[in-house]
Length: 186
Image (cartoon, rainbow, N blue to C red; front, top):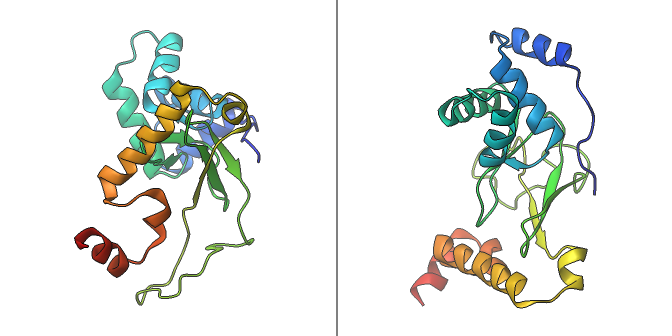
C-alpha cells in the first residue's frame, strides 16, 4: 500500500491551472495543497484546513473549487460506501484503494494487473472499457488489534448502509444485475 506523498510545488499547480484555462487563485492553490497534504480527505476536512489558511473562504467556494479541479483532472474524487466522497491529487495513474470498514481509513494500492483498465469484464455491454474503479474493503491492522464494540458497530453500520443503498450485503455486490434483481425479489 502506498499513499501519495509527492510534493508538487506551488509553481507546478499554477502551471497546471493555466494549462486547463483556469485562473490561479489563492483558493484553488490552497485547496490543491490541502488535498495534496491530506490524501483521501473529505470535503469537510478540506474546508476545515483550507479555512484555517484562508479564514474568509466559504464552504460554497471550497465545494465549487473541488468540483472544478475534479472536472479538470487535477483532483480525483473517490466515492466510498457509507462515507462522504474523498479527494486526492494522485491522478493520471491506474491505482485503486483499500478501505477499512471499521474506521474508514483509505490507502492507495497499485493496479491489480498493470495497465488500464486492469480488469476485463465478462461482458462489456458493447463499450470500450477505459478504466476500472476498484475499492477493496477490509479491516486495517489497528482496528483488527482492538475488537471493541464501537468499531464493530461502525462495521455493522457500513454493512447496513450498503444493504440499504443496494438491497444487497457487501458479498453480494459482485452479483450481476440479473442475479441482484432476483435476490431482491426472492
